[in-house]
Image (cartoon, rainbow, N blue to C red; front, side, top):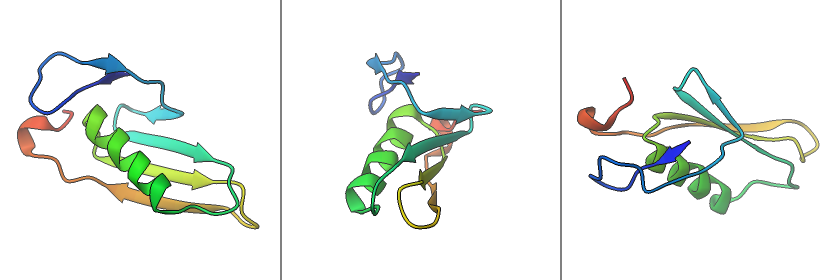
Length: 81
């Protein structure tokens, strides 16, 4: 998946995401005892770098399934269409 930086039209690199659903939802899977701000910041950075608005952070490592739904506000000219 290409990674974009600020107003660069061309991607500056690539990254492999856990899942990308319909080119609109980035899904990041974890198996940790607990999620913390580091993991939230990580998925927010992935959303920004890939110009994707919606992300799901899913953790299977806790006693019961834990998930966070994140919505990134992007300027209209940078959103995936």
